[in-house]
Length: 105
Image 1 (tube, helix red, strand yellow):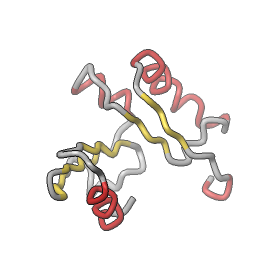
Image 2: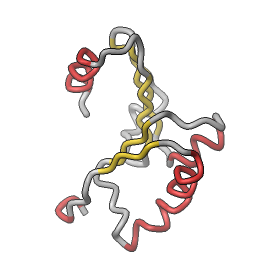
Image 3: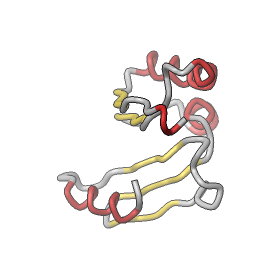
Image 4: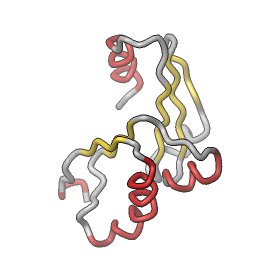
């Protein structure tokens, strides 16, 4: 989500504060390590794999993990996702994912 779109989403969320942690190898290097505030909400960007971030910084996962077009079913991506999926499966965290679109391969 772009910041403007995320800001619109945050404005519609009926909670006092929410923390979004955007993690992935495709997070732009220029954003990695940066954080921003949108009202009472915060967004942190990290260019890494989720299992690396959790093992380095915390034993706790967020309430919801969202994977946008992750490519779980594509053989060349399975090795990348296996440690993160194992971490999520053992954590009780909720996982929301969208379908993979081959045109994005």
